[in-house]
Length: 148
Image (cartoon, rainbow, N blue to C red; front, side, top):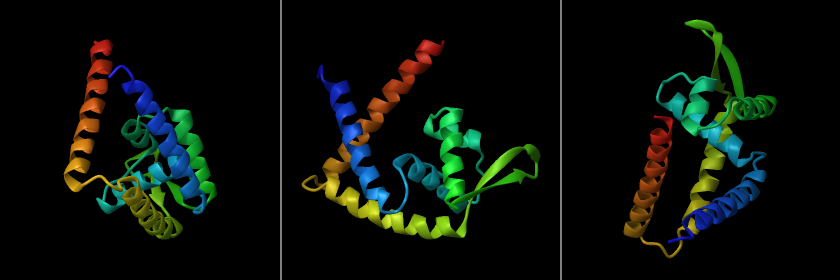
């Protein structure tokens, strides 16, 4: 168990490298795809999303999100609109191009994740997700304990 952190890091690096390779065909990076997924989820739920919401949800710093949003905007996948309730805030909206890309990338990710889980049965997949969720919760609790 002493190698848990190392194994998680290896898995994260391998996952991101392969995901970036797969997404390259769609002109996206994993960071861009993750933010686009969040924007699309917000849209499907009829909610508004601003940059701060993205930073909080993905635990990213402002400059990282700003740069990624700038690149998504340059690719014509999002647009920023003034929030009618607070003109200082910008709401992040997907474009029609993003809607099409989201469907295409979603299909590619589904097939890719199916390949990742080859040889792992449905119960084992649920168990794996549950264990990973528990580790993430433990990390969050440790951070909260340090903040107190």
